[in-house]
Length: 294
Image (cartoon, rainbow, N blue to C red; front, side):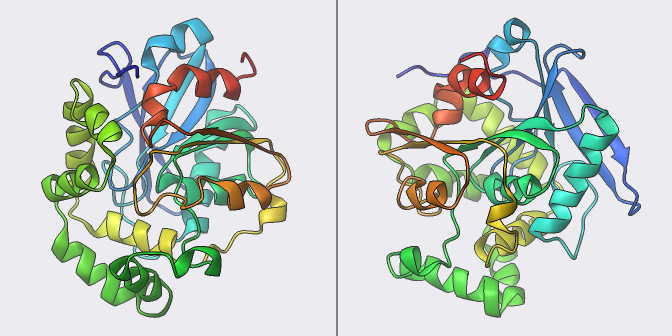
């Protein structure tokens, strides 16, 4: 297994903010050449966009990696009414501001439902779903979830205020990082505890929780509740990347198989002996697929 190096995991090269039409500000981070092919990266649960991936091959592939903070995380203003669609609308406006037309998008873990919502009739030319959360409220998955996770899924649909209160009282950056590592396979723990990844991951969580846990809590309500976008509206090619050794309780329980069946143009990459850290162990493969250089 290849561990992410200091060349692949490094501090953002640029930061920026946009004042949206709704009056909120959206912040993001960038790596790679400013004139390169823009790729939007939607980060995982609780993290600011400052944890990028594949920085060691962006110049070679002429990629400008752009990673926004979802509302209430990092430097983006909070949105008390946040939904999958509202975040998708924010990101669509950001892509329009960049002036690049439809662009490739990569998303990991809890970032995936927001990316799928963005892709439904949105400005997305190709999507990479990496170790993504699935629609856990679906009957194919719900009965097999741990009891606590079942309750969280029920609350996301029927009692979101209770779930928000629970999450805001339970997590801070350190406890959330400990939770992620403790629920990961040994294979992924080795990646998450390696340097420089561990320090960069911790920093992204500290930035993500800088406005307290409300932003993460609202993300979780949106991601764990029923997904409201129309699957048939996702017409771009979608590459799904999953590992058979991914032990995360919130990632797709069937390695993206059901998700792939719901998409018109899906290509599922499943690696039986790899984990959920594929975004950082297969960065080059994911990026070259997104820009058509695979």
